[in-house]
Image (cartoon, rainbow, N blue to C red; front, side):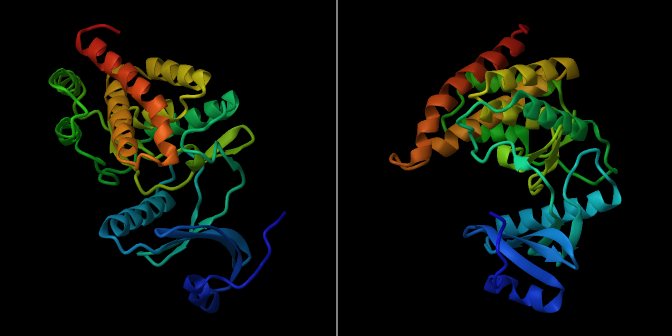
Length: 291
């Protein structure tokens, strides 16, 4: 059923008064954000409003606003929502795109359609090949620091750290723009093409970070992982991809192990722990000169 128009949430009331904004429905509300659909000056839009005052999310929100402003001046080669309006701090009003998410779950419980996966890979690889203006993006995180921290958490042993450090030395400064958070829910499929949404983690990474995330999250779609491995080989990024895969899987391992013992998502560990063993074999093989 189509959404029914009703009174906007209190947080959007001033927007409705100050602009020709017609509220339709609340799409999602959490302690962190409010996501709503409507129209502004007759254009279908999505409204994103930050509710959480935590400095981390305030910084991420301003970063995403900056990304959209940069995209308005320097168009990336991927479909993404156009910026319609922002207050520069908490409010984003974006073009409403057609399409459905690749999947609503972080770890899809069903196999994802091969053509949709192919469209997602095409978009992510096009973004990675893009050359934005100098200074437009900065590295999102410090790889050596992550390795040190993960070892301190007990997630890496000395051999793991040695292997990862050697691989880092082999691909230093090979930065490229990656989306940074290509969850299945952040990839909109429309026909043969895919659009990317939610850009708050976008920045410079070693090549293949986005591919490593999809490789990890689409564990129940073996053909997707085959497509990703083929893309890694074609792009010549086996070493940085292996580093990114280790970083992604270890982060997932830490986050899920920290969940309460009765948390439903803890059962994903049955997927993540074997993925970490696979990632370890990959980094040690490459560090020892094996493909």
